[in-house]
Image (cartoon, rainbow, N blue to C red; front, side, top):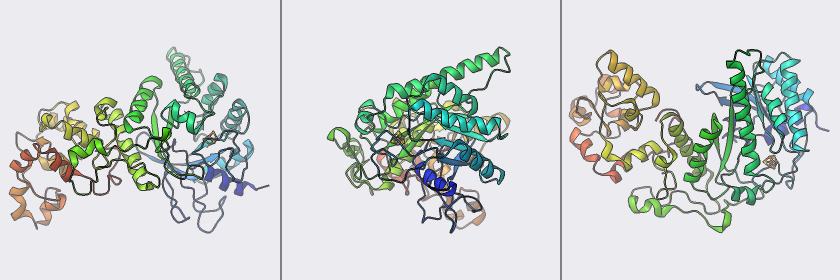
Amino acid sequence: MPDIGEKLKILAGAAKYDASCASSGSGSSDGGAAGKGAVTSGAGNSGGFGVKVPAGVCHSWTGDGRCVSLLKVLYSNVCRFDCAYCVNRASAETERTSFTPDELVSLTTEFYRRNYIEGLFLSSGIFADPDIVMEKLTAVAKKLRSESGYNGYIHLKIIPGSGEDKIREAGRWADRLSANIELPTEKSLGALAPQKSGKVIFGAMNEIRQATVETEEDRRHSLKSAPNFAPAGQSTQLIVGASAEDDRTIIGLSGALYKKYDLRRVYYSAYTPVASLPAYPAIGGTAVNSGAVNSANDNGLPGFDGTVWDTSPGISPRRLLVREHRLYQADWLMRFYHFQPDEILNTGQPFLDSAVDPKTAWALQHLDRFPIEIKRAPYEELLRVPGVGARSARRIMEQRRSGSISFDGLRRLGVVLKRARYFITLGGAFLDTAANSNAENNNAAFNSTGLGNAAYTNTMSSAGLRRALDNPKRLRRILADEDDGLQLPLFDF
Ligand code: SF4
């Protein structure tokens, strides 16, 4: 029988594939398993108390970009279901164990008091009837709140198939709930997770939405004593690359989920091959190769082989990570930049461009809308400019009301001129770096403003910038992310 430290190691490791708390690895000591949810056990210690970075502690980001630490564990990794993509599936040979509610309460409060964590993310394998499993998770949250005086963050996973009353009870004690849709179509669920059903998962999302609306109503009608219900809302996770759906299907589903169930977040998790699916699968036997989509436009571009997402067996994990990253960027466009899913992708363009971020890709397809005049453009148009983030767009609007604006000022407002300069004018003029290049090339003070050559890969006259708008292929090549965008911030682009 494993002790609590051993259980923690097993059940934290088993939880690492769930991305729906947006976790990141926290200083791995295991050679850098890295990626989301990597579990660390502390230098030279098998996990548990007294270690620098306890097992199961991961980082998550709040809506305002604050980084918080969470204890991310499963209640149990015993599971009756046999989802092909999951390390905890019934047929997997793995060490099984379960916590008791008291053990989890003790771990959480102890980690919280030691400032290791600010919250708990708790999920579980389906070791019994879904209602019973849900009751166990809820019991942990209830005990933490009502017996231990714990005020930290709690995220509970909704167990598929649990009843409405169980979901409502969970929401009384948790800050956030999540029902994972996992795969984007019923067909994929049927093939890879046959015991799950989209109808059941959407039913859970709907119940959470209903309970949230009712709670808000009660509280609005001055029933301040009405019990709270999951005040941080609900989220879900989609696995990317375990099934053959294109990005358009995924983004379309996310857009619908945001609208219908008022989700706070959809998390995308690059598929990590497990023993049952060692190769990148293609459901229905059709490997997706969208090379034809872009090759006509981009044939001959350096570093572009005409294949957007290679789905052949043995696909590199990096390619999937890039795809995951682009999906997050597209998701950001829907939530903060007022893009509709069908503006980002359509039947003729079903995959996100791996070379440029989705906003740049959209701009390259709509060059007739550019350049945008910074001194006059409405907020909605500013949001569409590559290199102008939502925050920068707001700051530009404020700056225009209070005073004059310059290219250097734009940089100070957070505009990435290296990208934006092709798409904007100021008082009718492009940013002319070529005019400054000879005199200023080696001028440290000038470069420190971000306007010198150090800030750009090349200098360009205003005439050159104007001409660039006539040549999308060339512009795409110039704006391609050297690192596939993996270093680009998700929030502002
Ligand atoms: S229900 Fe499926 S995804 Fe969840 S733990 Fe069980 S096998 Fe894994």
